[in-house]
Amino acid sequence: MKTSYSIGLEEQLTLRLETEIRRELDDIIIKMQRIALEFKIEQVKERSPFKNVLVVATETTSSLEVIKNYIRYQVGRQQSSKIWKLERTDNGKKQIFADAVVLQINELANNFQKIIDSINKSLDEEIDLLLVEEIRSLSDDKIDSILSKDIEPELKKKLELLKQDSAKIESMNLIKKYIQDNEDGSTRRKNLEALKKHLQASEQNVRQSVHLNLARLYLGYLSREHTALLGNKKDSKE
Image (cartoon, rainbow, N blue to C red):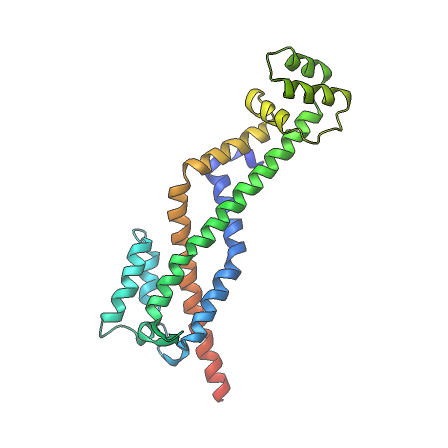
């Protein structure tokens, strides 16, 4: 069985991203369902009014701007689905469905930020736990070795307290920082620290990729919601 640190950093990051994306889906679907109901998209009886935008969204060369521009373009096209031109009035202002969808696609950036924040938080917590374990397992000889070096007085004081009682891990942030900066540490901790640096270095590319993925998921669920609402309307008539 592969351990998490026996696979590449990119693969580890992908697994964490997929987990966090699944956690955001409920929020994304609820917001999508809200505008679907507010615009009464079931009025449009076409079987697949979102087919073309889904084709554009899933092309390998697609991007967020390509998707949004395509949606806006549908408003002016005579042959496009009527669904994009549906209107609602919100606080006295008219809004068309195409603009509402584009707005929600833009707001998926907030979901991305929650994903990144959650991954960073979990990495920090995992690293911190490993640091605590490493500090608690320091031998007296190792502590003496560190004490013999030219270290700041406050760190020296903390290490002496630790030597007296390894259970006294409270307020050991100075020791954690020293161990993190100066000791090799466990393979697991080194891997997590490398993963955190990899995420920081690639965040802009990850942002674009995840935001695009969220937009594709959003549009897919929107298409399914329209089908479901049409089915419910047909059932209620029968």
